[in-house]
Length: 199
View 1 (cartoon, rainbow, N blue to C red):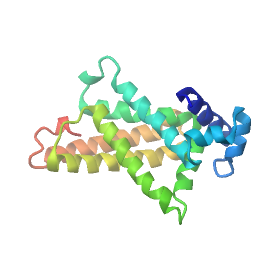
View 2 (cartoon, one colour; view 1 turned 180 degrees about the vertical axis):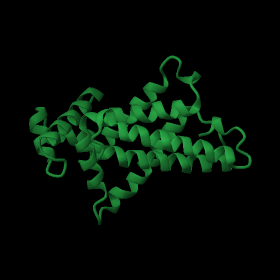
View 3 (cartoon, rainbow, N blue to C red; view 1 turned 90 degrees about the horizontal axis):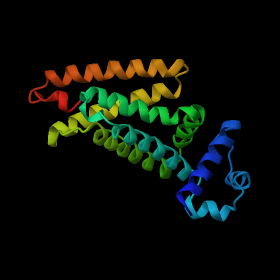
């Protein structure tokens, strides 16, 4: 199945979920609306939850696309992190409610087979965020910076999931505040003289 066909399946699922809900969405409905068979869907997506991964893959791709823009590497690290994470959120914005429902589905009790991969997904996105921003810290400094960045990412994402302000202004403000706090903390820690290169 081509990448374009897979994209069509995800687009169809998002559209249907936006009209109803992610919880009630069924793959046979997606197949019918997309004009394909269930086998066509199974060929590319082993289960409904795999559509969520594909949706978040798009956000990762949008973040990396932003990082590839002319002049991005010349920005201060803080601005690179801010632009990259906002690009990630912006890619999800058209289906914010559906995205929230996807996250809630992953958090349902008894779904450990879904929740563990979701934790891995968080780590993967944070790693791509680090790469997009060009972070160069290593060893203990890397562990500390990665922990701080994961906290920032999760706090802003959770805020964004319920952010109804224009252009996600509340989420943007929180991101700016958290990055400022992280900068101050990094500068205060011994051995973080190059903090501006790490957080």
